[in-house]
Length: 130
Length: 130
Figure 1: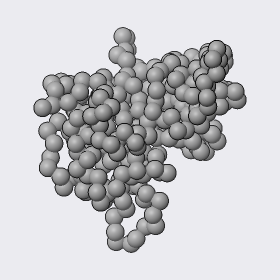
Figure 2: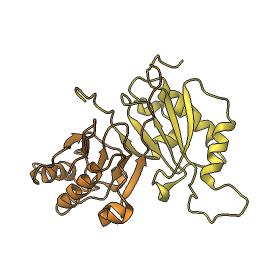
Figure 3: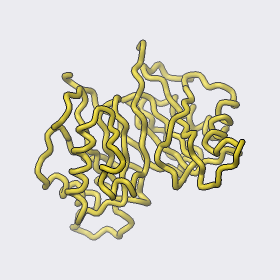
Figure 4: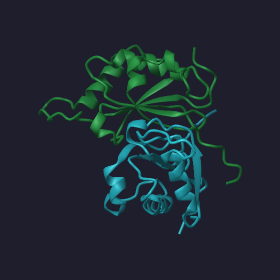
């Protein structure tokens, strides 16, 4: 179940990704197709799927990022297939959602996530004064 | 000059990076050496250099990330040399600091940043209710 957390989890999907393939007129690019495949899955409580512009991982797309406010680690995953990976991404996103800090134990992560982590960013420290 | 911004800019430096090289006893790993080289430069107003654990860009290290609170894009840059890149990273960090949203015009970025952007993450939307 989702933790009681002030920031919802976002699954950011780069919808401009061409994944190194030529663009076919009338066909969605792979990033847009991945977004559609993720949206076609059963909705997840506490995870918002958001289409975003380029995540600058063009050499290893398709790409998603998982984040959940400043208290969680942010993760970027690449080399995703729009044809076969939607269910796996949902599984990984649900695991991430169920943490307070974004850290899913390594062995529990989907194998694809273990092998295709592009980068991660630590939580943002609280600002004492603004 | 730094903008009046509620969140300071952080230059995160992965100090565990081995950059694919064997570890030499008594020598800092390349990530730690890069951190030391960055700290040895003239301090920058409004940019805090922070040593962090693995940023999970091990295949293309050394690695830094630039972020400045939830209103700015976060950028990850890789393939950095601890021997030669400290001044260039400082320049890129200062340019980033001088933006409100983290977006430095492409042509103004250091060439290395243009060619070695590993990933970027959009700003975090404000939460309406907690």
